[in-house]
Image 1 (tube, rainbow, N blue to C red):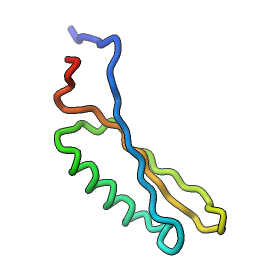
Image 2 (spheres, rainbow, N blue to C red; image 1 turned 120 degrees about the vertical axis):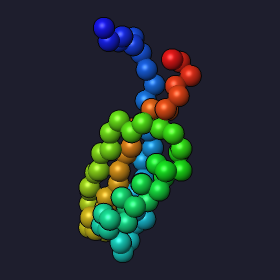
Image 3 (cartoon, one colour; image 1 turned 135 degrees about the horizontal axis):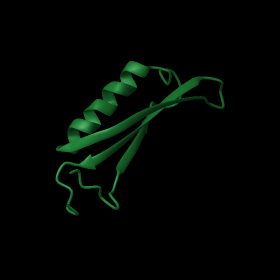
Length: 76
């Protein structure tokens, strides 16, 4: 039988490209997000959400939010 936890913690971080030229560079954003995930060490990624919006100057700007669990959750 599967045990269902009553609660759990989900951590997250968000990243965006710098404003200005290159703010629409999705591959660069995803590379930086991947590097940040690697830097976290042993985590289990639950979800990655990529957002786009227009900046005040009309440039398309991308950001991403990563939701993750620690691989060894201290509450287990």
